[in-house]
Length: 97
Image (cartoon, rainbow, N blue to C red; front, side, top):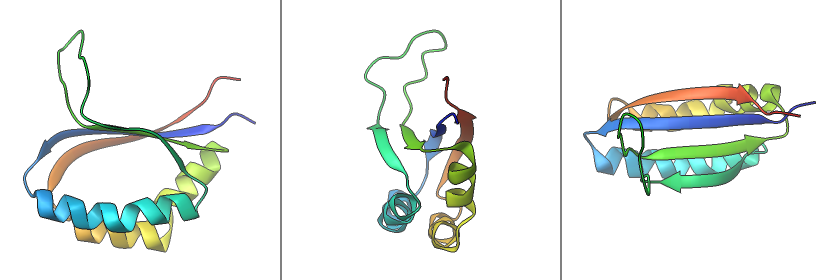
C-alpha cells in the first residue's frame, strides 16, 4: 500500500496569532493520527512561478490514514482555531511505490 502525503501550501497569512493557536492543536492531532512531519517552513528557494510560500509535508502510512487524520475531531478543532487566518491549499496525494 502506498504511503499518503498531506501537503499544505500557504498563500497568505493574515493572523499569525491564530495560525500559532492552530499549530498548537494541529501538530498533536496530526501526530496522534500517525502523521510524521517531513518538512515545514518557508521555501528556501522557489522556481517556475517563484512563489516562496510556507509549505508543510506530512507523511502517513496510507492515503486513508491521511484523510482520517484530516477528518478527526481533534484536527477539526484545530481548524476552528485557524478560522480565516490564512489562505491555503491542502492536498492529500498518494506516494509512489
